[in-house]
Structure formats: structure tokens, C-alpha cells
Image (cartoon, rainbow, N blue to C red):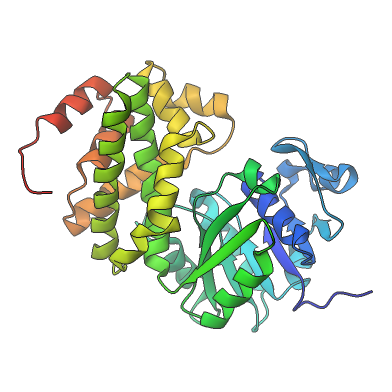
Length: 335
């Protein structure tokens, strides 16, 4: 039986998160195409029906098809879901743009500001693709291994195109996975970017042995920073009380599945960023986000003291203990 392009969805990016989302879509009985670069060994994925590098215990559902050819992957579906690190997001959009049809819709699960421009992903997408395509972002408190394993999960789908948001939410949802919709692209994207910086801070705090009181203070004040920046970029403050704001922040700050939290723990132990990144073996988005957030906050005049100290630790060789001292010696003021 032939599947129409309107029924099928294509996921671009066969890392841990792209694979997990493709598995979830296929598990929800949505015909799904997963495309990966040569480094992702798409032929091996197709042959072995699992991603040994990132999700070795998860078998691919029958509805998941592997495609090595980018143009064929794009033409197989109306809806395209891009799942790549933020620093290559613009590059991948540029690669797919020549192959897009006029009626296609583009979504992504990429988190983070673009370092060179300080743009959010939806702004990058508009730059590269123009204004004619419906756009959406998927974000929220999710770890790839738990989504891949089919554990109960909820996340947010945001788009200014209500029909596109509703369609994606329905297609990805199942008995164990629930998607909520939003029209606040900027708010959902700011939450997804800033939480990674704050998760590094939480890892540093715990690595230094500062305890639960410090951790919850950091999360609470970090949420304030996230909201300030979001509002300055036109986001709705209420968005940060939801899954893509507070939910994602608490998850990444408190669980060691978070690569950003693990980076913070290692920095507190005196290890270098490069050494930890090599050991983790995947992109630690908070390292990129810290630099981008620093630049955007400075440009907009937004006060973000926790994020600022993470930036100083990562890029100015400030010792973690010195950064904590700087935070604790700030002038007192109203909450």
C-alpha cells in the first residue's frame, strides 16, 4: 500500500533526538522517513533497524523508513522535521531549500540561538526559506532515551499557523506521548536555549557540593532570567510557566541524563570544556548557548547574572568558586 506525501513525515537528523522523535512518530502509526548524514551510517540503520550509537536498545517500528538521499527524503513527505544542533541549523536549511515544494511545512526540534547573529531558530528559518512556508518548533522536557523507550512524556508544539501546530500535535501523540500547542514561537525557543545554560550552572553548583537550597535558588532565579530575555524578544511571560519553560528547565538542571548538567559537574571538578565534550561524544548545546545568550542579553540590556557567570567560566577562564562568589555578593534587591 502506497503512503501519500501528506500522510508521511520526514525527520532530518539521525542523532539521539532525531532518532527518538522518528521512533515516536512511527510508534504512533505515522509513516515516517528518517534521513541521516553519511556519518550517521544510514545504510547500517536501515539494515540493523536500530541506532547502535545513540539508542542501541530501541528497535525501529515498521512504519519507520530510513533514507540516505536528502532529496528523496524531502520529496517523500509534505512535513519536514529538522533535528540538528543549533550551529548547523542554517546550513541544513540551506541544503533543503532547493528541494522544497511550495506546499511543504517545516518544523524543527533544534534548541539555541545562532551564535553569529543572535537569531532564534524561527528567525534563521525565515532568513533562509522566506515567508511562504508554515513553521513550527517542538520543545519541552524530554530526554531522547526516555522518548525512545516509550515512557510517558509531554512536550509543546508552537506555530503561528494553528493548523500546522494541531496537525503535528496529533501526529506525534500516542497513549504514552502528549503534545500541547502554543502560538509563541519566540517564548518556546528562548526557553529551549536558556535552560541549557542554566543546567550547566546547576551542574557546577552540585559539583561544588552546594546542596539543594542552592540548586532551587538557582532554578528559580534562572527562570526569572529566562523570562526577562523572552519578554525582551517579544515572548509571552506565561509561556515560561509551561513545559517548554519551567518544565524543561527543571528537567535539565536536576537529572544527569542532561549533557549540560554533566558538563557543569565536570567543570566543578576542574576539568576542561574540550575534554568533557569529547567524553560526552555529543554536542553540549549550553556551551554554544552561553556565548549567544551573553551577546543577545548585552544587546538588549537584559540582566542575566547566572547566565553571565556561566559565560565567564566557559569563555573567560573564571573559576567556578569565583563565579559563585560574584553572584552571592551582588547588591540585594526586591525579588
